Length: 432
Ligand code: NOJ
Ligand code: NOJ
Image 1: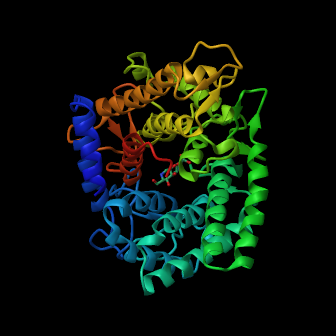
Image 2: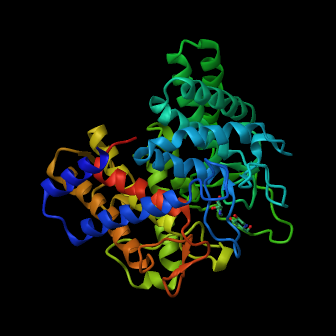
């Protein structure tokens, strides 16, 4: 059904462009390769390999974060995978581990990883809760009960640890993270709504209370002097590298809005602080990599943060796809809102030359032009990805900053999920 709608949208609107054709084939590549990483031979059913790469790096683990983001997309075209994912999640929730649900990754036999690693990380249970809440309508009978049991455990954990420091999604630094707190907030908010609808008022009131605290906490990340949202507060400095990431400019802030999908406050796609952060990131990355000297339209290859050194510190497929998705979602959000006020903070991202204070109506000619330009820029990002995927359309974790070829873990599940998520935003314009 979804595919059919996508096909109709593409075929009736106008003749398919070469980019449309590439997107259609890349969606197929992504679905096939993503599914190969779910429940692979030798792993417990429901396991999601971050990547099949067994060494440098060894990604043959089920990371709670990656798995939730991957299943969020996979369940849209392979809903039969829900049962195994829920069963595995229940098992992992009960598996003994030093950090409880703060354990970031599990072995393919379902046991908590016990190698030295940066733990705890608190985004995983929140992301899994978001995925399960979105998938809840798919669950019938005993599966419905199992989903609710899983959700209760995850959400109670999120409510308990929502305000505690932990390692960030990039598994590098301890502190309070905009990304982690955003998805915790979103999970508790969605959880409160779900348990409300089930008549469990006390449960939902508790989740809502912590969600409100987190909403207030998120506002504290805005740094007016720098002009962008800083990624971490109360950062625990590394004694060996005291200046590492001191700028706090990180694509994780954009991922936070994309994964939380709460159209309110600092996470909303029309918030000037979010848009200022996106622009600052585009500027920083345009200088950071040699391959950005040759532009694809207005898009630039995007990485995690500019002082990244992991595997040479390259642009990543999933962060570049996130910038495509961001542009589609900003366009859709302006349309949904009906208008947008131009400010000194959002003007550069919007690419408009209007005086601050101008209110642009979405339906006006100027508004339609602005929305179309944002969508075109989203397409520029996808066109840039097209240039850097492997010859079979494959996506690893990163692409080389000089040569533009896939590097680090091959067939990274999350890369495919991020691409599919961007394409959904492009074709539906919806805020889901
Ligand atoms: C592995 C992590 O997954 C990666 O994100 C990080 O950059 C490296 N370790 C270095 O700390
Ligand atoms: C490194 C990334 O930084 C982290 O977010 C991810 O969970 C792991 N790789 C596995 O893909």
